[in-house]
Image (tube, rainbow, N blue to C red):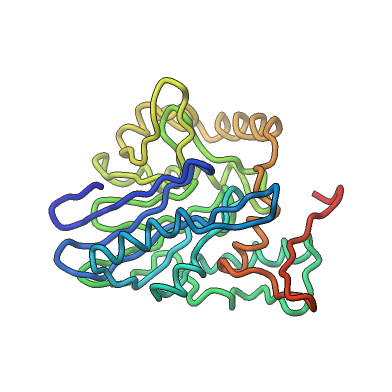
Length: 290
């Protein structure tokens, strides 16, 4: 747990997906937000479990917090969100960038989803605009559009910290891929520069860490550390150099293990597709289509 007198940031690291979820609140007020929750999924059996989300729920209850917002930094391709599950137990408003509609339209076509699936963002309770400021308790968060990894990536700034999603990783890991639909390395480079334009002591909280064998997982860095040592985007790396690196690197990467189930759930704000006549919900696997 990390605090700066008033602001409390409690992190939860999901070892299976290397995802970091957060509960954020002030010590003198029960209102909190949850960022990038995880619903555990076993691709071999198609079964979900709630072990990661239940840790968040237990923490919220233990500290007698009230969930105002359940935020997504983007429609994740590497894990399923637990937003719907958490909302069903703790309440809260599920929100994501208003650009999620472009993601929904693309994947509605890829998965050939029926008329029941709307690509207007209606699955979410609220769609955030760039630079929108939302108050909760004695705090406020500012939504910062940071496209590039996906068109709908959003960072969240609260006091002297920013939750950057997949915009940046730890300096020794670098940056996120840009080869998903709508991704673009030039756009990501400019989003990174937007984040790195904040004061150097600004703390950056990550959505993932993929630590090398030499260290354990780390959930936060600073603007200064990124500018000095990010292997992909440190000071001195030009836009053209970044684009070349990212394009070549992305061409060598395999798809994330959970991308097909994750996207179908995450564009639905954590809900599953409607059950069929036998009472079972199904996820689609396109053959030779992606």
